[in-house]
Length: 201
Image 1 (cartoon, rainbow, N blue to C red):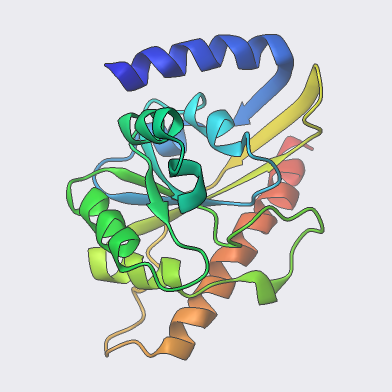
Image 2: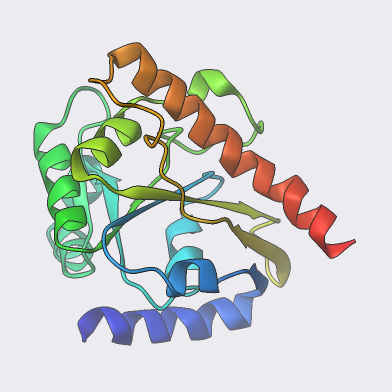
């Protein structure tokens, strides 16, 4: 209930401040069970844009510093977010991620780990997302957002289709294979921009 109320308020604010167009939101809305949503990351407002664009609640990882403030930390947790230490391996964050997926929830992750303004670079891909998806037996859905975050700026959110990145793997996956899958995920995210433009023409 708390989440839905906050999202309604945020949706109203987004309507006022931005010109948002969402492509294929049904690709998220019509899914069931555990799902990982992965997107490019250009602004701290990205999670808000995605949250107001889908009917499903998305649980985000957030850098642990955001939870240090008592009030903000309380609000983030009430909204389903949980902290992650970006400087090292955060076992608690991994466990929380898998728990969300095993309970049939949607996990939101930015595979580049931080905000990126320079576009696609496969070296920014991380193996952690693939590992979490494999352990939870969850599919991954890519999303791509573009546009200036300024008053009445035109924002476009492209939503891809959920995909099983492990259907061709029959043996135990090695670390380097997780890294390769991470690169594939990142490529699929950035391809949504060109694919979306082509579909409109």
